[in-house]
Image 1: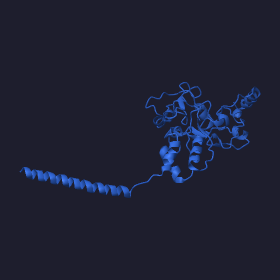
Image 2: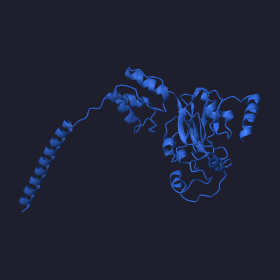
Image 3: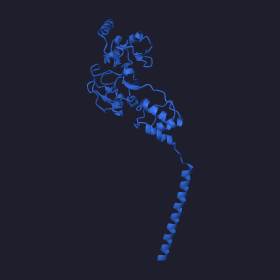
Image 4: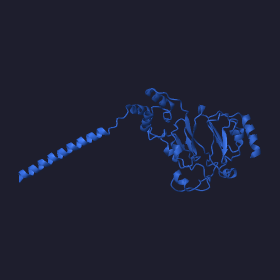
Length: 294
């Protein structure tokens, strides 16, 4: 009886060993058949990228960008916002390619509906996310286009380039930290954040309003809303300002930063950032121009 059991055990061991050996051979042959040899240049490009994996390039992380660049055999159409032109130049040098200069971009908040200019009319109590609040009501100030102030954009930023101003209730973008990854733009349900040209010396001019309601209604909810009067359009000599759906828009590709449009806006909806203070004469002249329309 003991010998019989020993024979069965030996047979089982040999059988399992044989099956395992055959399986190993089959798996090896399959692995060789479908083996993917990865281009070593992908690792080289990935090492030069900042490793932020922010998705600002439009792909799923730095590895995906490196793979796409190597596959395309060119840097045309690719950009790494956190790395900027320096990183793209390093990649080009390592690959023996050429890289054109990309215009530096930055996020801007196109809403100035602070608690001062758009006083709360109702109080929101619910899930504190802009996406949820957007589906429920116009906003505490009454503007159906303005910032909801829940900070979804701040949470989406991986570079600590934004914070919520507790006094104004609006997000603030830090120029020196923003890498133009676009995460905040995608996160805002009201599309009030826009990527714009950073501008020479960080100077920018834009309409800080996206309200498409007619002038009276827009002004009722927010004192600094664009009322669609068209004064800025008439003032611009470079065709950089257009009017659509009761809202003015400044094309940053055409804008020469001449600063002629901000003074003529009766609601101060046009913002000019990082410019030197205006001379008093210009301010007085602008005030006189606004008086008849007030």
